[in-house]
Length: 67
Image (cartoon, rainbow, N blue to C red; front, side, top):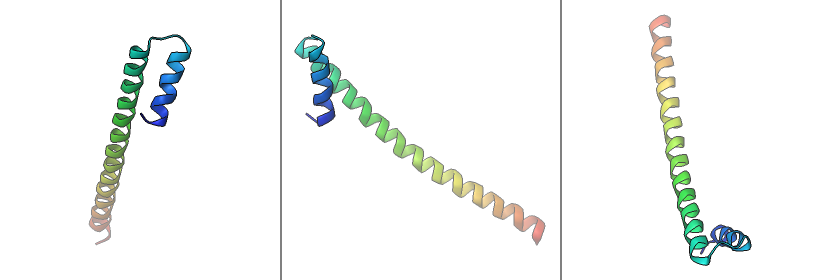
């Protein structure tokens, strides 16, 4: 169990949630965090791709009018 997952589990147990339900909830939150990290990585790639496309379009525009 990761540190964050154990903290969530302990917080749920502190408010008298049954152990099995607390464990399931902590695991679900941990899975959600993994999904968010994956989406952030994909978003970074998309930002780089958009930057490249924008730079390419500016270069084409400049070449058309400065040639």
